[in-house]
Every structure is written in structure tokens, then in C-alpha cells.
Length: 291
Image (tube, rainbow, N blue to C red; front, side):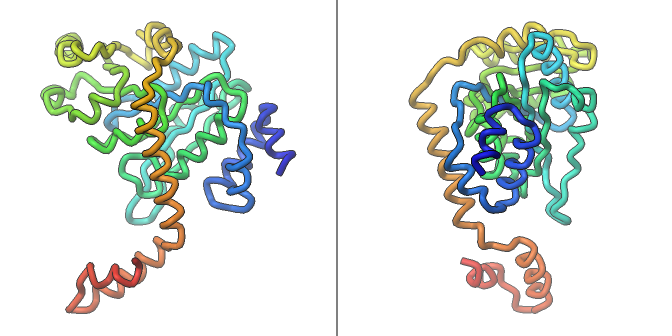
């Protein structure tokens, strides 16, 4: 295990991949690895979230290209939703970032949400800490955006970017306060589409009192990426109150995970199928045996 930890700190992608696999699947000695990690808290974690179809993966790919040109070493954790029916995940982000696969300064890992609606599970948090113990300059976490639960990304990100598109239209009036509180920046991607300027201006007015920057990008044409990257490299303003809240949320998820680790979801699914055959089925009585 010491050799594995040393390999991670020295930048071995093979050692990093092995450690991430152990941690993600709760394979021994993953618990010991986590407790012995030398987590570099100074390495910024950037959360990228937003609705499906906003072009998050393409945007992350463009940002990565820019930072690699600056000799930065980048890690990307692409979080894909898990199907509630077959517990699988598409992991489609790999396709849009395929040009980065052979880049020695870029490490990409896809992970499923494991049923967590907001895209962040305890395993995601642990995997980020493993990445943070390696010698990366910046870590990006791209997660599915599903409304209010997007705020979960704030539990592990130093900066959170919410990606929107001009077609969001009237949805701008329905942006929840939780998202407004966690977003340090907004990106209007696909800004070459009709209505982009109006949408961007309305968004700027909405967040002006909070001094949240709004960027326009066309990620697949590499437009607006330089300005966004300049902002991403700006020092992160420390907020102890927010940091305590986020770390408490992170601790809660870790505790929740360990208390639920004996719950076999596949077995739960199987027993639910049998229980539903009974005419007197009651979900509250059913869950008594699992509590």
C-alpha cells in the first residue's frame, strides 16, 4: 500500500487508477488508503454543473485544452447518472473528451452517481480526495444537473460553475435560490444561438447584486474560453462560514454512506418485486426490515 501511495504522489496514472478503483468499489485496503492520503487542499476543485444538453463535457474539454497549453496538469472526474432500472451508467462524457486520452498531462475518470440525484455520492467525494493527493494543478468535476439538487456539487468544489444555454428562456426566472447561492460563476454556452445576448443580459441583471460573473462561450468553437480560464485561475476567496458548512455536508455524506453500506440495493430491488405481489403491500412495513 505504501508503494501505491508513493506512486500516486509521484504522478503515476496507473497507481492513481488502481487506488480509485479500490476506493470506488470499497475493496480492501481502500479504507486505509483514505486515512493515509496526503490530501493537497491547495489544489482547486472546480465543479461544472447544469442541465443536460448544455454542453458541459465539450466546455470542460475546451477548458482543459487551454490549461494544457499553459503546462498545467489536469484531472477530470466525469459523473454520469445511474439508471434506476438497471443500475448502469452511460459514461458518455468519455466520447466528448476522447482527444484528451493520450495527453500525458490529463487524467480522465468516469464514475456513476450510484443513484444520487444531485450527482455527488460519498464515493465521488472520496475519489476527489485521492485525486487531490496526486500532483495535479486543477481538478474538474462535471456532474449531471437536475435542478435544485445541483447544490450538492458545492459540498466538494472550491468554485462551482453553472452552465446554461440560450434556450433556457423563461427558466431563468425559475432559478432556485440554492443554485444562486452555490454558483460562483455562470456560463452561457452555445452563445452563437439566437437569443443568447438577451438571455445573457437578463442573467447578468439577475445576479448583479451578488457580483457573480457571467461568461458567454461557444465551446465547440473555442470562443470565450480564455476569459473563463482567466477567472478560474483567480485565487479562491476564503469564506470560513461557507467552508464549515460544506465540510459538514461532506462529513454527513461520508457518515451516511458508511451507515448504509450494508444495504444491498440489488437485494432490495429483488425483495420489492416479491413484496409487490402481495395485495396488502405497505412500503412502510416493508422498509421496517431494512431499518
